[in-house]
Image (cartoon, rainbow, N blue to C red; front, side, top):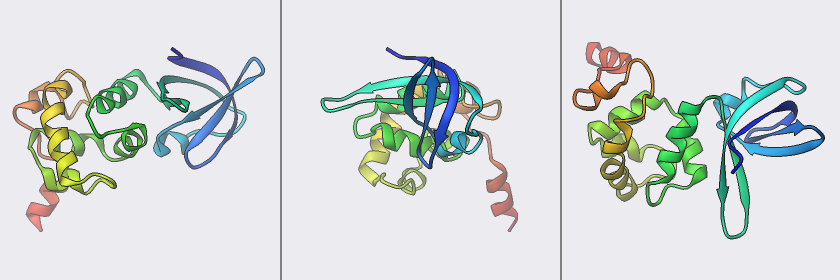
Length: 159
């Protein structure tokens, strides 16, 4: 398994980058927020997850191990593939985790490609798994039982 790459960025586009490692170019699909921070010619180190399918072997890249672990946890849910995992990683993770712990099917259904059945499956399969994965300092395992109120919720309540 390829779990880490370090080299020079040859190019980036909307969904992927190519990193040169001693004359070999590795194409890596990444969350768009991460790609936006990368420039051509820059030295880069990233964590990767290799997804092997019947017809392809695809590398997915992440800024840190936490993001990689979160991605791999998402893939453990039936109905969530790597592309859906990248879409979820591009959304605010704190809101996603709060929606899981609050069992908020409607919020999860707003993610492109997620219907009510998939949202329900995510809630059932991810509640226990996400307790062990720190998403940020504002959402921790304590918030798994009592989710924190986000700034958006406060503003909406005041309005």
